[in-house]
Image (cartoon, rainbow, N blue to C red; front, side):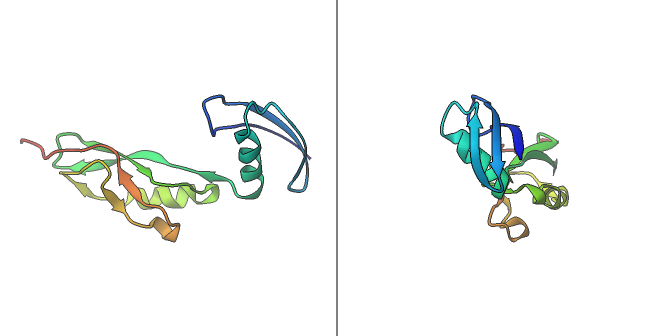
Length: 122
């Protein structure tokens, strides 16, 4: 089987071409650093992703706070995790690094706030 993908593990964004036999790499082209092979193996065996999004904030000086996961999750769990994040009801103040959902869906990662939001002066 042939596979083409763009590596996302470093800023190079290498266009990788691979010939595979099952999960074994027969031929690998385009990877300019060792991370390309690592990424390819991960994509074949257990694709992982991280999520960055925003949530609504009540009574805050800003209406939205940026959030992200503090680790990677299986790619096929992205929509389930996003559904959990959408359920969040945050009220200011929020602190950067504050855990908003601990161990989301039992995946071993937390949803954390990445922007401090003070209370509205209204």
